[in-house]
Image (cartoon, helix red, strand yellow):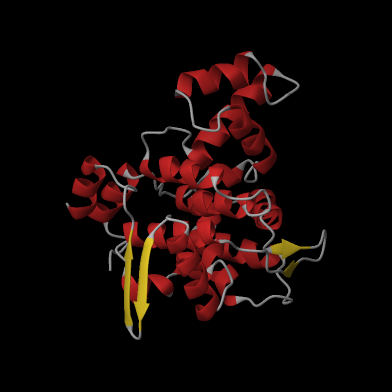
Length: 266
């Protein structure tokens, strides 16, 4: 299993679209699902990054009130999602987005954001360990931030970062409530499970290990539901999935180009 903390593995994963470090887009914004939806309505198959930049900053297609907010919106969207079709994670996210219904697209966006924002990723194990109906407060997230960078954030920053993180979890349907939030369970589809298994694969987790990875656990499904959705993804041609007893095989035809395969095997 690839250790995400190892330097050489980080380099490989960064080439595939992951981001690491002490900070991330959630220090300033939530996952911006409304803006992402609008942008992908205009560019469903992706476009050169310069075209997207021009649309956001100069054409103001996302309807921001000031030039500075347009620039910040563009920067945060790139931080969260890359928006570059030659980046492995974003290219495959974009292909799945087209095949995902509107209700499940925010989950898909959150899955990509988890890969690209170290701050947001702090909530991943906590989210996976709390059952639907259990409370999930801002204080939970503040505690995770403090553990991540002890004494490194001011109280106001901790509160703001935690609000942004919990806001994204709410937008994706994993939390409910305004002031008092509880863990909820959104409707998860085959494309979400396929993407989670692919992210696990990039991290060196395959077969039965992938089914139990943190990337799959965050979806909140039990193992039977995960296997059922993986079979569904297989039937839809998203992945190749076979499950016979303890033997699990998961393959991703056409998800990786030759250069990316070399990176992954390097």
